[in-house]
Each structure stands twice: as C-alpha cells, then as structure tokens.
Image (cartoon, rainbow, N blue to C red; front, side):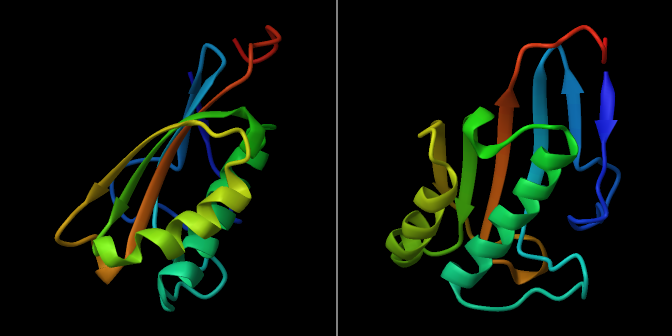
Length: 129
C-alpha cells in the first residue's frame, strides 16, 4: 500500500491522507474546494466544484492516473437546489461516467457547498507492489 501526496491539492486537515493506492486502486479522500495555493475556500457551487475537481485531478496525476480511470465517486452537496450547477461541472471532468452516489447533507467541513471522493483503477504493473 502506498500513500499518495501532492502539494497541488490541499493538505489533509486531519488524520488522513489525500489518497491511498493498493492493488491497482486509488482511493482519494473527499475533497472540498480549498485552493492549495491560498488555503481559501470560496465561490458558488459551480466554482467550488471546479476547484474540487482540480484537487482530485492533482491527486490522480500524482498517482499517474486520470479522470478516465475513475470508476466510482461519492458526492456530497449541502443544497439540493445546487444539483444542476454541480452536475454541469462534474460532467466536464468525470468523462468516464463512473458509478456515483450523490447525497444531500446538512453541512460540510469549513462551510463547503460540495465534497467529492473518488476511487480510480488501473492494473498494477508490478512496480508499486
């Protein structure tokens, strides 16, 4: 098992990692719209979803994966009225149409409007085992 870390995504704000890789799978921790350069979280749901997707893309890239390798996502929104705007941005990134859960929650860390976690898969080449 390998821990995946990149300075191009927000540092974990608790006792967890950005991602863990095992047996060809990458499990990305839930990402909110923290800008890794500034530490800020702001914007409407579309802007936050863009930042979340950039954060996930950076973690995927650090593991030599892409959005096309994502097989499952879990998405959390604080307002069902934001679903269409969220979905428009989501569709631009998750082009492989992974399996997905989307849950409406009462709140997210730091007042975020959206959080996404992702699982990606690419068969191991034997080098990382």
